[in-house]
Structure formats: structure tokens, C-alpha cells
Image 1 (spheres, rainbow, N blue to C red):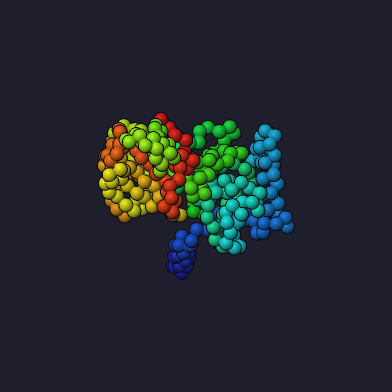
Image 2 (cartoon, rainbow, N blue to C red):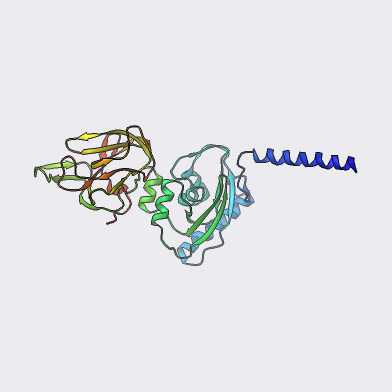
Length: 309
């Protein structure tokens, strides 16, 4: 019996070492039928194309959407997500949200992606990036929506699948790198961007941002992730914070009663950076909010989600 017992122990040891080695491996390709080539000679690609065509037909006719199935694909070369979506005849929104990609960017050779065989958007149950937070907050019930689980390269994620849906203008702006989160929990627009009569002097001047009225002390949020590049007290802006974002974008928050961040602080979208006040040239509690691209001001309104009061 002893030789058998030793053999058993040796086998068990090898098995345990194998498990440890497997656990140390990097994340593997999603466990879905694999598309090897994005051409008609590939059976899986033909199945994907047929299912997507049925989905698009359902959008046009109002017929029920087909069953939702998934495929996997390992990129043979660097490519752009929007270009890949066009090659697959899929809306780029579908491809981006299923793979939890929050912004338009290049995909790298060897990267595994999940390919849904239907048109629509996936709303993450547990948001993890700015786009997903925006979608989770603004996407209400949708006709025919389904609860789905996707086994992606980074793990398993739960979603609401909204068949036939597309990005809203605000979601599209976030994905394309030009969108921003609303900087207050609620607010009332009292002065827009552009030429206006100054409330202090009455002179016609260019207003480089927007004014959002809110009670004194209201929390002010970072409109996008970035780094605090400037803080101070200005004769016009009062207590202010300037945040630098990727792509040459900046946001400025003025007339604060106090600031809650320091110079060079790394901030996340939605992080509290200060409180509404009436410092500087101000006629009452409000937030002066500016968006700049490479130093030039832009009208913030088209870049923000719908205003809430």
C-alpha cells in the first residue's frame, strides 16, 4: 500500500502545482466561438454577420430582436475601434460598451475583444469609467431590454442590454473625448457662453463660460478626470480651481466659497473639488464654469449632459 500512497501524493502535488501555474497565467481570450478572419470564408464570421443583419432588420421593421450571442476575436494588428466596428457592420457603441471601453482609442495587436451579434448598447451594472457612470445615471427602462453576463478578457461583467439603442449626444461626446460631467448635483443656467451685458458694469463683454446658480455651499464636482494644474484667488474668478485633462482640455471652476483640492491633486470625474460661493466679481452664489481646449474657451453646454434643476 505504501508505494501506491506515495504515488498518490506525488500525483496530488503535481496537480496542485499545475493549478498554481494556471492561476498565474494572464487573462485568457473570452470563452466564445472564435473568429479567425473577418471574411466570408470564416464560418464564425458568417454567423456573426447573419445575426447582425437580422438585428438591423429588427430595428427597421419593429420585429423582435434575435437571440443575443457572442463571438471572440484576437486582433491580428493594431486597429482603431471605430474602424473595427465598421468592418464588422456593428455600431461602434455596441463594440465599445460590450468591451467596457470608455473612450475612442487604438486597439493593440493580440488584444482579445468580445463581438456581440446584435445592435444596441450595454449598460454596466457596476460602472467603472466616466462613460459607464454617465450611462448608468441617465439610461432608464428600455423596451425589450435584457439582463446579460459577458465573459470578457478582464473578467465577468453584468449588463443591461438595450437592443437598437445608440449613444446619446452626451455619451458620444464622452466616448470621443470631448464630453464632461455636469459639475453640480443640480443647477440653474443664469448666463450662457458668449457676448453678454456684464452684471457688474453693464458693458457688453465676452463671457468665456457659463454661470450656474446653486445654493451657497453646494458641492462642486470635477467634470472629468485630470490633475489640478492651478488654484488661487483671482479678482474676477474669486476662489478658483483649474483642472487639466487629457487631450489639451481644461476646466475652470470659479467663485467658490472654498476649494477642497490642492495643486497637483489627481482627481477623478465626479470628485468634490470645492463648494459654491460668491467670491470675486459675483452678484450671488453660483458656479462660473469654463471649458478650454489648448487654452481657447469653448461653449460648455454642448459638451455637458442635459441640465438638471
